[in-house]
Length: 226
Image (cartoon, rainbow, N blue to C red; front, top):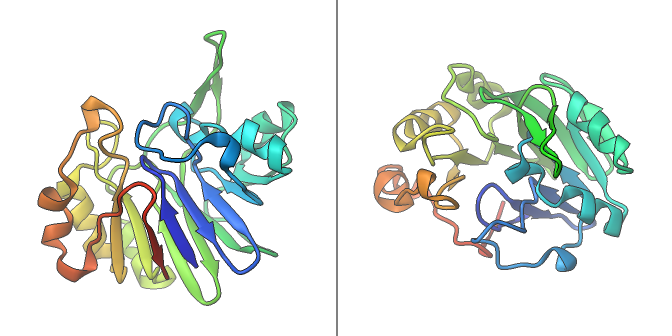
């Protein structure tokens, strides 16, 4: 798998045959160096319904005929907008032709604010375990630290983990360091920081420098192979 980070919590995963995006928030994401019209996605995986994670899902999915895989209530909502969506839920897994997806718990919220100001409840937030070619990637979504991350490390054994460090809405660097140790991935990458003033962090000083060769900061547009 080749994984490209596009700022905030946006990941682009390239396998031999598929392009899979997680939380494609492009418009409004000042870190993104790609435009929505240039996104090619066979599949979109969503962690939860907040606007800075659903992002440009509807536009991308309609332009690419993408399959969207999301927690149940969020998937149902997207179906009403004309998107092909496959509903899943926490603890459930499914093997698709592009790889295996399993949703984990995350401690956060999940709702979508429509243009008219109406707020739609979109179920429970989640993290994502994505496996392909014998390798597993863990995207924690927006979450607080929780002790079952130890189980993710023990049983899922992800090679690479993407953890939020922005604080205020999610784990901060201190808690993310604990999470990184519990998960035990070969490489841990910080996400969900510096997009907005309230989540500004120095990812190297506060996080990856304390993980040694197990931590890596990816700049927006930078890739890593797993």
